Length: 349
Image (cartoon, rainbow, N blue to C red; front, side, top):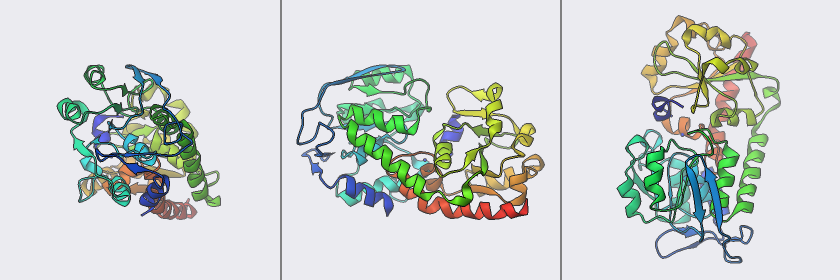
């Protein structure tokens, strides 16, 4: 997705972490390693070497990873859920709470009594030296914007896993399964996927059935983008039982490679005329006021009647943008009430 939109995005999480980490043990260097028997790499089994191919190269992992560094989004959460708190993570200040960490990460690590990961600058200004100082034995970046040049530097430090095809486009279950494979815990990763599917299905309601939605975003006045069905925030809404507006099938000419979205422009806002609900987010109250003041935007039927699911809270926008073991429970308790409110306005159709 566009870098400006990416910047504008990403309790229950702690409870999930405690359950998954109940059999974990802390190592001398402050990391936490899983001791489950199912993954073949815990206390009951030897680590099986694995080679993972991806768009930028391949990673050969010959020993059980103990010092993991994560880039992009979602990988830190999955590593934690699999029993290893990373030694370092890419910082994400836009969605962070007062501690400087994404709240679901902070809550889960604090609940485990483990040491919080070091944070470093990522993105186009990736601090490779900071990564080097962390002495990682595995670098996870399957959902990131890692460049070939960055990858070449990181791969000299430790086995590094990038995205399978395009930046920022891996599907959520594949991300979890890839990380599980890299950590020698494929069966545990499969269980995480199944558990997330169950949580989302349980949150679905009969009144969501047959309702269509579009998930849109803006990069300022005059702009309008639509996320495609497999983009993670859209996949989360789909999993709740709503249906992506079929109009997305005709957006091929507007699709922007590597973004999982189509930029249709505000002049084509009428494409959303049949969407029962519109999901979106705003960077702040001023951005919301600016966008909603545009006549073409205001005339979108779902917007006009108030069938909009939108948020300005940075942490919530970030959490609802990705599906992983820590964000889903954290998001659902906040998401469902505002979806229900938007559904309530459908009587005004």
